[in-house]
Image (cartoon, rainbow, N blue to C red; front, side, top):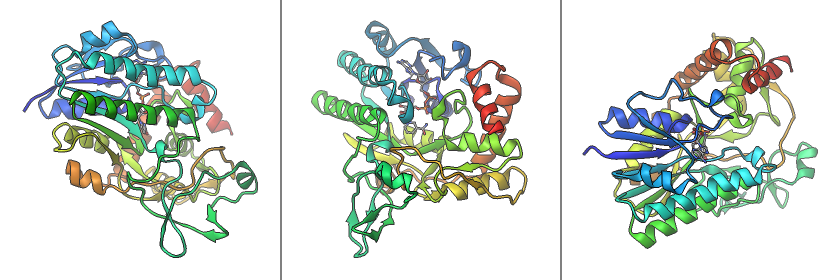
Length: 371
Ligand SMILES: NC(=O)c1ccc[n+]([C@@H]2O[C@H](COP(=O)([O-])OP(=O)(O)OC[C@H]3O[C@@H](n4cnc5c(N)ncnc54)[C@H](O)[C@@H]3O)[C@@H](O)[C@H]2O)c1
């Protein structure tokens, strides 16, 4: 049945892919988005946003506007957020205000609405390190690596000197949010939404997205992610620069697959739950860089190990997707090479045509290319 759907942050990367997915399935889409300048250069409606999307430009912390945006809506996807773990450390106010206050304002106004389901875009960052098994095969949760370990280049986590084996991380893993303000704010959003949903009888799901990639990823933010940075190097005929030794395992999931999981969450027979949304596939940074170089032109040149690290980065985390399969009926198709090619094409078009030389993204990419 056709639904009227509000997507906060609907002009962004994931939100716009979700809008496409919903429109293609006959739903009506409204977006509430303040067109944050660091994401949307010039603060204009992005050209990739389907013209059928009704865009209300404004802030999710503006209660009166949120009330207006909720009018007549059946379902809300709450994706608006100040994104980026690294930045959140020195932009605490910006992060907490957009994410925590923004969610609180939305909750207040939802009570008076006719919305029948709330779906939050949460993040794998609430896990901190993923789950491991020790040498006896027992599941083991470990703290983040200490700065002195990273300084010594001891990349792999150990337990009492024993090497651990990374395994897929299920939703039951204890959250570990001390690594960044952003992680804390995403966990707060989850708690707030689920508590609210239970209290007011509005089925609520918090979807923990893993490493989402695809076209429309903002290149003007430092959080754009490793794949966009790899792409800029590959396009310049340079070897991608791998943080640490490139052995970190991640779960790279195509934005269109995330959009499809979100759509299924609208009608799933599950309520008040957190659900991982990933590909269910562990890929090392070195492997993804190699594949990107390969799809860019059959090149066999490898990546360059930089040995650089970021305090707070996790070593391995990839999704156990069994709950998404059972609860949403979502099976990731495993679009990797096709998605990488689309990303490369997107980055090429941004850097060569759309992006002005004075813009932060151009400067960022130039720095990448020059380094
Ligand atoms: N991209 C990923 O890999 C990833 C991974 C895990 C979780 N997430 C979550 O998914 C959601 C969407 O992320 P994205 O990658 O599409 O980011 P994005 O920055 O492309 O999109 C976010 C959108 O929200 C808007 N926005 C920001 N603050 C706002 C505010 N106060 N009021 C109204 N609009 C506001 C921005 O203008 C932007 O269009 C976020 O909640 C993010 O935490 C993303």
